[in-house]
Amino acid sequence: MKAVPVELSRGGHRSVVDPAMPTEGPMVDSFGRVHDDLRISVTDRCNLRCVYCMPEDGMTFLAPRSLLTFDEVVRVVAVARGLGVRAVRLTGGEPLVRRGLHRLVDRLAALDMDDISITTNGILLESAVEDLVASGLTRVNVSCDSLRPERFAAIRRRGDLDTVLTAMDAVESAGLPPVKVNVVLIRGVNDDEILDFAAFARTTGRSVRFIEFMPLDAQGAWRRDQLVPGAEVLQRIASRWPVAAVEGDDDRAPAERYRFVDGQGEIGVISSVTQPFCGTCNRLRLTADGAVRNCLFSDDELDVRAILRGGGSDDAVALVLRRAVWGKRPGHGIDDPGFLRPVRSMSMIGG
Ligand code: SAM
Image 1 (cartoon, rainbow, N blue to C red):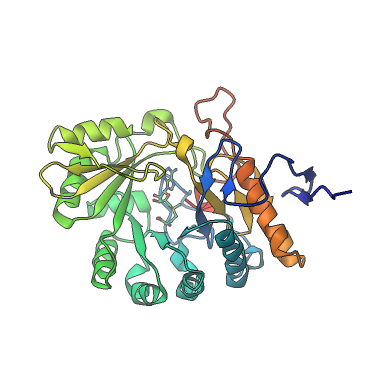
Image 2: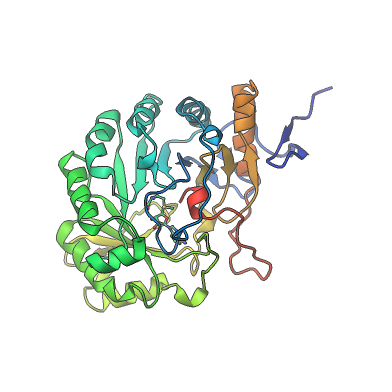
């Protein structure tokens, strides 16, 4: 008789694998979405305390021994590569507070990925970028929520704008494409800078991506009336500089891209709350402590660290990845009446 694979989820309950789940070919969910993009959080720690993400004091962080080692991350990614993952993004917390990150990039590059990118707050980026590029990093997203030094300091609570702007220049001097700039807009806090950021995109050639504030802050203070809908951002920019949707765009990417009709650059809107793009989601996440998650907003997690540390096989790792994908829901459900915020906040999952 063929054994039915059984595995442990975080929390320890045993579950039987759905016999309908494919065990060969690319990682696909039960709605047919193919998953080829892996977000890897390398730490839950951060050197900033952005108001929409973490409280100023009182965060508790994972013990160092809980974090996957670089060896463990590489092992998961190698298995994922065999299941069709082509792109990885390093995130956190702040990925650059993890020492020697370029050594991880080196080893990921050896797995023949199409794309190895990082999302960073930029504070430690300038001094790290040469090593990262030499190791095979292909793209950088930098978060920056204000172009006004005092406001930047108020939103991010630590760090300074100049350091971040200098780091953006350093990325491009090191030979990478223009950075993408992530801006989380909060009503009444920085939404009066939408046109300033659009002008910044036009003059620098950097794509500025306006992100809707999501209910993922550790404080649980999110309110819907604080988010600025992507449609409003677009309308405000288009009334100043006409824009057109970028043709042939990868419709699985979270940002809807728009180019300025006069040819001077582009912007993106990430309308995660008001116009979710779950129907085309191709992303899977690995938390810093080795949980595999299929969605920012779902608490369903499968434990891959236990397999790695318990002498499990690559097949067992692959089964966890496949199961995480197979169990994905059709959408994040923020608007469902029974929606509950995930237990882990953004910095604990990896944005
Ligand atoms: N520390 C890095 C950074 O600042 O880019 C990477 C991790 S951070 C969690 C990833 C992205 O998530 C950043 O662009 C950040 O602005 C965004 N983010 C954090 N909390 C958010 C929230 N509640 N809603 C929307 N975006 C959020």
